[in-house]
Image 1 (cartoon, helix red, strand yellow):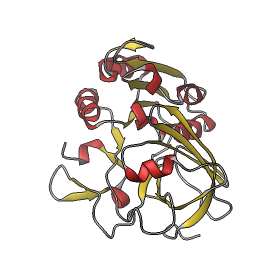
Image 2 (cartoon, helix red, strand yellow):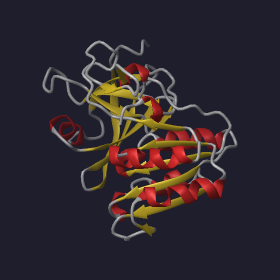
Image 3 (cartoon, one colour):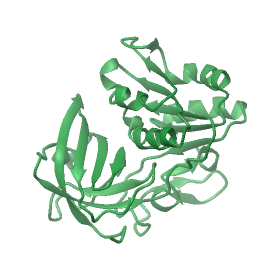
Image 4 (cartoon, one colour):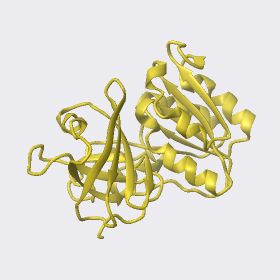
Length: 256
């Protein structure tokens, strides 16, 4: 299959894990090319032109025929997606974009809320290579720590942080970042979450001289570099386009 052609996939599961947060599993048959951790797919929840644009989603987990997505309902498109039941179909295109590097280094994963989405696929791949990562996972409340148990199976250590203290440590995930880097001899950090979290994490990580790569989200119209709707400012000049240059980028490349 061309990565730029839409195919139909059957919904296997579409379960609400927490308020507004869903775990979608689809069977894409043999039509989907193998994916790499960090890549994404464009999804149309129904046939026709309403809504007009597809939505981009990180690949949460991937096996032959089977793909998983974590998403939060934020508008009309994701609202339609949440209504899909097992046995119904959706259209998807992918895998697309640049993913994570899975070379053998000591890796720390830093996730904020639904930003945990790309990390299960990545953690499993690292684990299978004999390189279990460390995980620092923050959320507002314990209910938002979705899929933490499944992810922890592939991690050497998991530290969870909630703003209200309902589970794990209390506070912001970035408050525990420096200790996690120093304690585990981290050589590379991967992050995904709200922009304020990424900004704060970058300042801390740069002070340790450790590379920091982030998976970013932007509204995309096409996913293949035609509409240029996913532009983010480059640190020096110009723009990066997440569908082609990302979604995984060196955090130092971005003008925050």
